[in-house]
Image 1 (cartoon, one colour):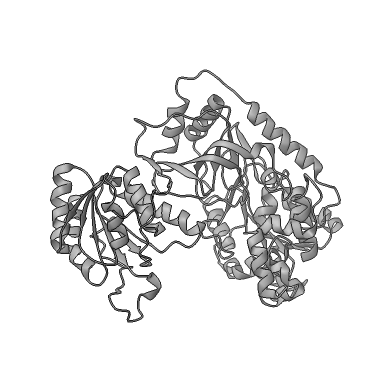
Image 2 (cartoon, helix red, strand yellow; image 1 turned 90 degrees about the vertical axis):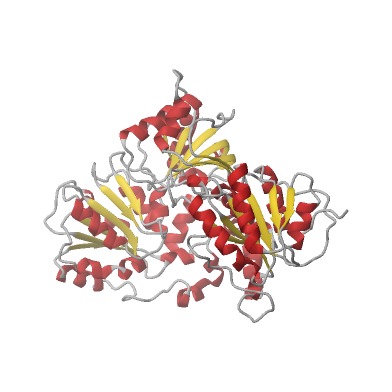
Length: 578
């Protein structure tokens, strides 16, 4: 008897069906699903039944799932075979029956090119599947990881929120090789919708990683602190995390060193809450647990092992229950390391977004609100701590440069008693500057415009655009637009709109206006402080902050490789012919 197919996507699906204990299969005949069906047929774990007509197969699965209470897999070939599943899957959808429809297809790139027996299954009726996905032929590790996540999500969706039918469109390469003797080792992602039978916290170093988050109520803040106290854990944050508890650690500086790995960066378990984070650098963990009421698989750190579809406060209180211990040695280690790194920041750092963040971060008025633009402004301010009473936000959801000023105005209108700051670059400012003409623009906003005349992010040493040197300014970094650092353009615009305008082009000039920016006294007009910096200084400042510690001296080429990866370097060298 033949062994398993060597087609990896089919093998991963078979392996995870076994891991989830799904054994009932109804197979309809065909060539395109042969690799999958033959792999099931050779494994005695599965109970395989034949149904030559797909409409009947889907309804058979309804009855089988109804009586057994188990998920049932139905699988068919290409052409119109899958269309005949629709009546049975519609029945399953409204009865919440866990049926997995695996429809086989030739390479997805063939869709739409008049290839025999190839139809488009990318869009299906809303009421015939709770979740639908495609599994292309696997070519590299990124494909393997993506396939693993998709299959796990599909199999979880069979039971999630009451359950229902799920669709996987499985591509085949027709390789005809059935020599595989073993199934691959594929990770099953554990899924919990309640806290009745959750796993124990493993031994070792534990941390909570908090992405962007709405301001936390006292209940959640205390629950996280109680959890950290029991397990000697910490909560790694950036400014968008908005966690202010005892165990908070501002993490970006310690984890963004290009040539040195912080001793705090190796974890046994990391618990991930919140949404998109602007802190690109993060610790490495043997396991990652995602905790969110939405129950979605968010594999941000490429190592997720469990999803807890529960309230965050309930999760932390459950694990912190019945403990009178209070440990903080890991917290002390992290805080001491941060203090050492901040002390290492040289006084002569260039006049830049980073320098301004260092000057102002601790001087922001109590109870004020900070909004940063992406990406250089967010990074620069994330290197430093801000007062605990200051809330901080950034449009990291869509992570675009548009809308920062509009967001600021909307927030400031809502709470006129607070001072609202925005720190953003020139491209982001001019992108959204029309919002400043809104007649509702309040007096409690203070805008710090870092004007370096281009998208300086694309000129930083660790960005791919740096390979192009000055040529990057033409199109990649969009240099020279919006007056090309005109000293009067923004001034006239701001003053004509009734804003107060101040500016600085050096450290000495900034010292003169610094007290105006940081004053806790209400102003009668909104304020724009335009700070003129140079792209080279911006780059040098970021480089300095990311090289406060080094295990050894690295050449410029090694530094770039560490920052953006060897594979990216090779690709760009080939593009540039170097």
